[in-house]
Length: 60
Image (cartoon, rainbow, N blue to C red; front, top):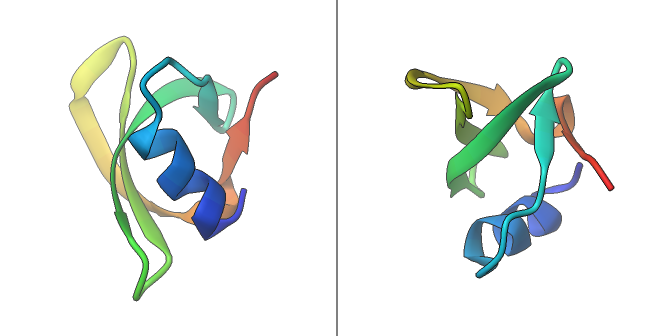
C-alpha cells in the first residue's frame, strides 16, 4: 500500500478491509513524515502497533 491510499482509507466514511500479514486491521493514524501507520487488530483493539505503510494490504 502507499501512503496516499492509507490516508484515503483512514478518511473514508465506510469500511475498507486492510490486512497486516493476513490479519484484518483498522488504521488509527498515518504519520506521513515517517511513512508509518498506527493500526490495531480488528479482533483485539488493544493490539496496536506502528508499521510501515508498505506492510499493509488492501483487500478487495
